[in-house]
Length: 169
Image 1 (cartoon, rainbow, N blue to C red):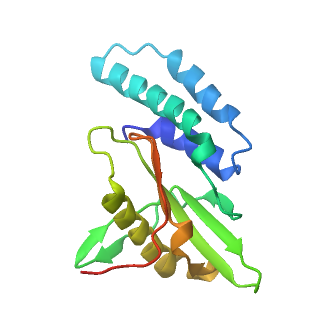
Image 2: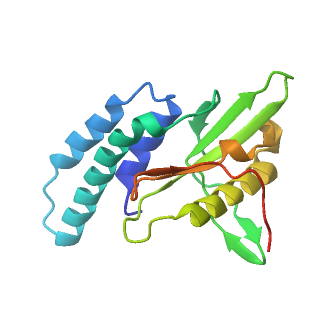
């Protein structure tokens, strides 16, 4: 994974309910101390540092909507979407209980690419896939809830809100 270090640090920060933001600083310092010889590794490390610094600037844009975050499964099952097996692998699972006592569940996906940023439609599509994932694989924790299924697009510095419904076409 190209953004392995950034993904791990950001996921840990998010899972702490944004209380452990020092994990981001520590990851940056650790990456800055590396001095790889290969140019590809140098670029990967620089990209991870950039992603971590960008995420730090986005902290105020992240709202768990009263839910409790936890780390997602590292090797979750694949989803079959129109006869294609898709790896969804949300980094964060969100759990909430509403006033009626009903349990809701959602998921957060991190997106890093600057070359292929997500526009509103693509962000909505990823959110809808996360909602279907929550319904299929997290049902024991609650009902999949679209507003709790969203994307943090670090490459474009946007948080794409949760989609309210699945629109299969």
